[in-house]
Length: 117
Length: 115
Image (cartoon, rainbow over all chains, first blue to last red; front, side, top):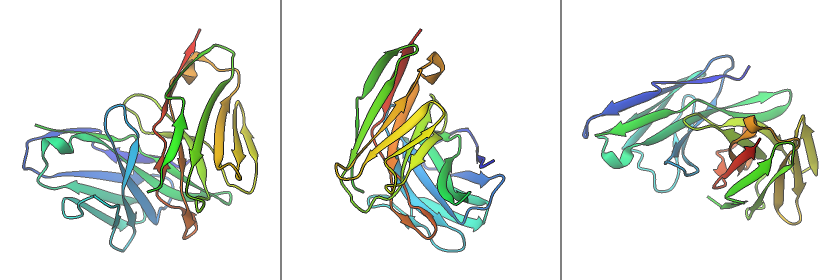
């Protein structure tokens, strides 16, 4: 149980284009999902909190107009990187929050490797 | 975000030995402390998590020790195996709305188990 998927797993795009990444909770509903970014050999940095049916909350320093987040249903959140540039190349990982047996946990997706050329 | 300090940065342990990774935090509002294991090119996988109302939690070969007064917690991997070779992250968050908030991660520990 508690499986989270991401699509695509890898994407290469040209500078100036937009890319959409999907995050799905497959066997549970998640009112809250999170988006993280991880640069090579570095830690994960929280970008934003995505709540179903409401606007996302962005961390300080994350451009909300560049990283558009939509949480349209209890099992799907999307991250759109608009007007992508090479410095946006990174590993983007989502997590979904759920409560199992009285304990709350975050389960992560497999990540999406974005390369902007 | 408040920082979570993790050490060591890298660790080499012989097969069958005990791997110990330490973390310290600053924000006393943190109320949830998970450990994640990550293999190259993959997302982090939850190993074990603890809340500050207990001082220790054990699941199989993995144990979290928690010291609230010192604001420190550690992961112990007993009988370490080559398959445990991975990067380990500690994390912390506050709790609201029935669940843990966005996580603040440590910088990670690259663990190598030598056969």
